[in-house]
Structures are given as structure tokens and as C-alpha cells.
Length: 300
Image (cartoon, rainbow, N blue to C red; front, side):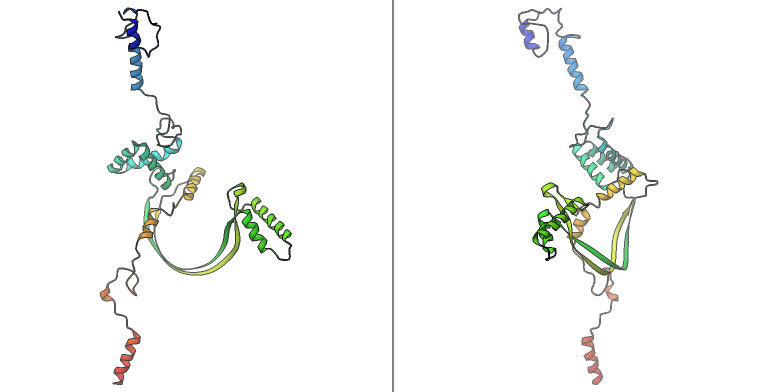
């Protein structure tokens, strides 16, 4: 027989009809074995631990969106993840091993997805670049360049500048009124602007300059290109335009950092290019020194 005190200590966290002071017969409640309340509670907890509730949040570390169907990711992260997986499956064993390491870490896979999104278009499951080539170009370019010299101005700066540029034959009140009307026209028009309300500022063209330029150039470049999309639809076009808008990246790109810190190698004197056979180059004659010597020899 199990006393009430012993039952309260043993199962004080479970709900039951047993009250203090009552005695409990073994035939009434089976403490151990199959079918007793304690055994059923333990079995239920064990089942919960064995089958935890399915995650509904996106697997990417900082994404709180709901995951898509049977995918581990939300709709935004699912497509680039599948593209990364596709490329890894088509790659080397090292690529596949690296992918597995990334896929098992929410932080690393999110970083990989964001990098893939920057460097690839969602319409491609394969890698973006299909081939690359080096190209050099030489030429002379004639151009006429018109520069609109814009300045970002708030209303106060615009009024102070415009009032000073209006005709002196106008009274100060007339100049002030004309400048205010011009500002209102800029606000109502399609002018480029930043800020809103009292912090509104508009890019105002203060003057224009025109240049005529004759440019002789030698252009060396490495070009990369992807295969074209056959019969692109409106969605493909939008994705490509969005990708073009967020590229070429930033001034912190690997190429620009390398180019900015690389020392400039001076070519051999008087000879274009760096690979030169110096044995085949004749020494240049200094006429200022050679002519007097030749005249002296002839006179003697």
C-alpha cells in the first residue's frame, strides 16, 4: 500500500484526484508497469522528446519568415539555396564537402546565400559566368561632353542663391517672390530630391559646362559573360534589370582594392611594353653631344 504522503512527494507535479489523508491501494492505481498514470506521463514525455515539433521558421540565421512547404527556407532564401546546391552537385567532391559544411550551419549558409544573390541572377540555376576573355583595344575617340553641375540645396540655400542671381532691376520683394515660385516649381516637378518635409533638399543645376575632348586610348580589360536567355519573359527581364542595378558592386570590391594598392611597374625606357630584349635595342644617339664631335673630326 502507498501512503498519501508518499504519493504527494512522488507525483506532486501531476494532476490527480488523490487528496491528502486518503490512502491509495495498489489495485486502484498502478504506480509502475504498463498503463499507470505515471507510466503514461513518462511515455508521453518520451514521445515528445523523440518527435519534437517541426520548425516553421526559415533556417537562415537572422530570417524570421515562415519556411516554404517542405523546404528549410522561406521563399526568398529557397531559390538561391537550391541553386547553390545544384552547382555543388555538378562540382568537385571538395565543392560538395564545402556545401555540406555550409548547409549544416545557419549563419554560414545565410552568408553564402547573400553572396550568391549579389553575384548571380535568380533565373540561372548554374553559375552566372560561362566564359571569360582578355581584350585589348586601341583607338582615337572624339567626344563633346556637356556637364550639368548640380548642387543639393534646401529651400533656404536655394532662396539665398536665386535671389542673388535675379535682375537687380527688381525690388527685393519681387526677387524674393520669384525665387519662392521657382522653388515651388521644383518641388512640384520631377526634380531629384532627398529627404521630406522640412529636411527636403533638391538637386539644382547651377550651371552647365561643355568640353570637347580628343582621346587617344589603349584599353585592356578582362571580360566575363553568361549565355543568353532564350525567349526571355517579363519576369526574366525584371530579374536581369534588378541584377544590373545592384552591380557592379562597390568601391570595396576585390579588384578595385587590388588595383589601388598594386605598385605601378614602369616600362623600359623609350620602349613600350615590359617584355623587351635589351640586347636588340640600339643605344639612342644624343645629337647635342654627337654633332660637335663630328664637326671637330671633320675639321682636323
